[in-house]
Length: 78
Length: 263
Image 1 (tube, rainbow over the protein chains, first blue to last red):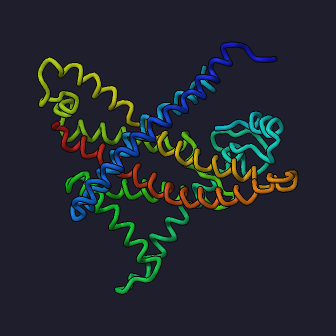
Image 2: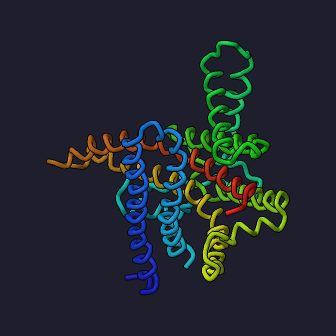
Image 3: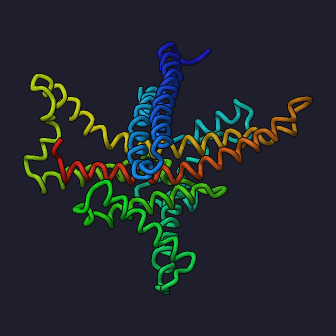
């Protein structure tokens, strides 16, 4: 037995931030799924909107990345 | 990101051949001294290789200026046209003076990502210390350009004039926070994606030699992990390009905000 209860809490919290990954997965899946649904209805308009899709994906992904940031802070900065 | 101490200790504890984070250790290229401000490290080497590769493609590859382009000239022209069209479509025609900067960003990131996929290579873009300056430079450029081009009107970016008056102060607060969070998400997105993918490949790579100690059904571990490495590697090739694309297109989006701040 080594370490203390605060460190245990920090590591547990760092592990729990993996749930943020699930949130980002749902968000990115939503963006791309809806893009695909729209693209199959009107394929001629899809080409011009791929850039918009990637911007949406990037913004949805950013929130998942913040959970990674929280994990890093808990492991190395707290 | 991983320090030498954690890498070595964890490798012993988990019984793996190597720690998945060992590949991100920054170490001097010559000798074993400490890493100072001007030490030539493996990061320096792979960033320099990326620059050399870009020079070879864009300068040497297009030196013949053939009317019917060869292979390297086609790739160079394709990359040029791709980024130029992106800047025009996303940020508008008046953002074209910034095209050389955005092209430089894209080429550097895409070449660092792809060179990092070579076996035994090092990925400079997997370090926040490399991506943060890139993102901060974009942030500073956008802020300065916004104030120079629009003056005080640039602050209209935070004042959502289409919203009800009572909501505007709240929205302004949210807009200010999201503006200053941009360089954080911009840099960590790239570094996190590159780091995570490479770490996953290394985790499976650590399982691959287990055929020597496994018995019974356990001998399936090696072929399965080799299969997983192959699949992850294919995905990483895609991610390497997509992340460079996303970094570049977000730069264009931010630049559009600076040139046309009206909401």
